[in-house]
Image (cartoon, rainbow, N blue to C red; front, top):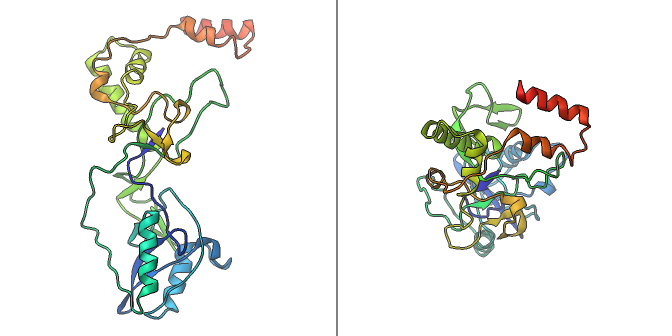
Length: 281
């Protein structure tokens, strides 16, 4: 389960949203407004369309197009910024009101204390579990949106036309980024309390989560238009490693508990015996 610690971001493309990116072409810098829904079929992706646009553009180019909404991150081989709806509106108003609009992108600023945070990312998997409705899903949420991490240097991070762009680092979102956070906390708890079972550690993590964001309100979900996230979206809440050290109470799980779970799954008596035999061996 991944959480989004950034603001609700949009590609702001002309009237409804805007994705602004900048590229050094010849001696001039261009800021181009584009709409993926208007991309000619001849182009394999917006990057190649963008390069072709620059190649045929003049300094006063403004590509007026229509909407496409993206509230998740898309890798870009170009320097880029993502704007909120109101900021995108301001940019377009500025472009329309100036015959020679100018802008710049400054990547030297790190914004801290983004509010509200955390937020359940729109890409985060929601419950219930399709394969096993008797199992609550998800269990817990952790930081997993736009996590900067080491990356294999032989695996591309983005594509520029037909060429791959390589880097030793990458920004990745999803359970693949959230899971290592939980795994690391689990390992620390096991090192501190070696007698705890994995089920006990899971209980400690789930019973000490945060369900309130940094604004003092219930954690919200992006897929729910920033309404309070439901348990099937955020599970028990956002992981809190320090509180998990002293959970107060824990629910352990025994083999019998798992065997009881097999009943609503309509396992045959023979299959239950096989599972029980494997657990006791």
